[in-house]
Length: 289
Image (cartoon, rainbow, N blue to C red):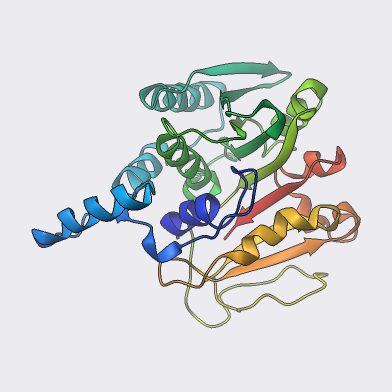
């Protein structure tokens, strides 16, 4: 599921380019720990060189997940998490900054695009947990995906500016993302937000996936075998970019949910860090399992 998330965010949309591009999912190469024949690496190397498509490193992705799977609730635990995030970003050539607010600290990093008029795209995940939880799915998975995306974009140029935000105190009432949107200068050039929250869990038993009451539509499956992308109806072009993803064995099915009235009638969709952006009129997507 985690590898599929990275691929979907990177290649199932045109967030990082100024014009629409065709996603060729089956040509994306994924590094896995499975042994391969001697001729395979040469084939992969040639194809990657021809298509210039980054390789998702599943080993690195899961290594970050394992290292982040500890309670991140107390001040010292969250400081340890921030230090890990900052160190990993630095290894990939990203400079990050700490943005303090009442009761917490966000981590922010930015890679400028080649076209100042193209605006910025923000990728975000919260890094804190509730008490007595290792927070593996909620939300070490989202942080691990952002760190892998940072690695994939550490050298390649994009027209749009790419921003990464690791929000603190989501579990205390979305405090980190609320503080972020209160800085109006951050929002002026922002063209869209993609939030990763709980993106690593899957279940394949019939009935294992429960839908919150009050949802206006029924998901594509009662199993936890799909990826949900939630957006507001005021920014349909943003959520529709995920509808262009080609079906592939490398990706879970994608279920898009356009929400009217900024989620007022369906409060269950407002429980992650995308919600404060909706209230500020910024298009934001919640990507979740």
